[in-house]
Length: 456
Picture (cartoon, helix red, strand yellow):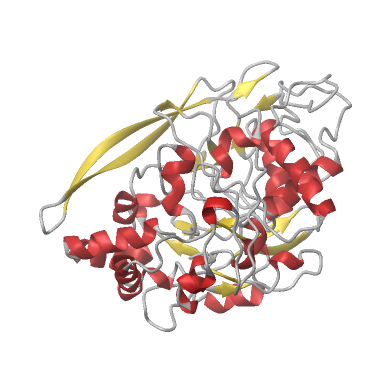
């Protein structure tokens, strides 16, 4: 599936076929901006742009990456099965790629919430690990499919359209989602809280994991000491494998500490596949539990390969960096303080196991911190230290390719926004002043800003 690998070396880049480009074609400062992932940058810009292996890996590493690729794409089935068994007994989907289309984000559906949207659930309180309290009989994630007995519940979504008019007369229409639960297999607990979340892109995770913790914490300003209205906070979450509390950097509320935990959790919660990290079925203690002595259902070799695959997917290059309108949009992005949270530049740390990701200047446009995004985007469900109003700053790299990788671009944590303009207009809380500044821009300046964002 991903057999074309782009070779890139900072300073003098040799590209194959139609992607050939001389280093001298761009001024040095613009050329570096093109390398969103540093040396881990791919120059594909089609529907497969998010699925490229990073360059510079050994033959053995390439083999492991490809094994992970096949596992990521594989449709799992129920046991007993000679290969790729263990699905269920309750689950949301049958493969990783079913949610992360082309290694990108998911696509929401109208009516039943299916495929690439998942629903977290909990009840009020704080669990012993500091996280959310499981909903009795439902756990921490609702599974809408089952092999044994009934699915836990069906999740439904409907949208109310809200018109918006800019001062210059241009219009937009926002979709406000309403979620409801139907056909629960047992009565839902009192006071339950849900959070619907769209599957995010997979590429670039290894680079984000290598950003030093000290760097991320240096961005935090929980008391807004500098008075800029931005008070990013870190989330701290429990790592069940290391059995300690660590900085959260993955997940839409920064509720996961590492790529390994993210992958293992998805295997268990999304597909019902146990592993050495999560050896207990998600259905344990429920009537759907299969009681089979087949755990762990996914081997360490396949788990490790899938983790390595997720860590070594390249970041698509930024495009049109030398376009004057695009450069004007970048200046506006900074002037209206979008870059206060969506930080453009950071350097990764060093990991001797991943030299190809180490010491890279990258452009993810995130601080990986939690920010209050206002009541309109709130889910009302705390997640470790994240409040119901807080979300992790979404990396913007690759955002301009969502149309090509998914066919239909959707944005924000639940996919409610159909355009980047809609996504900006939903911003509130700490981002309200930046949103208001965007609204007051001239039509020409708004177009320049959007052209810049679509170049990422």
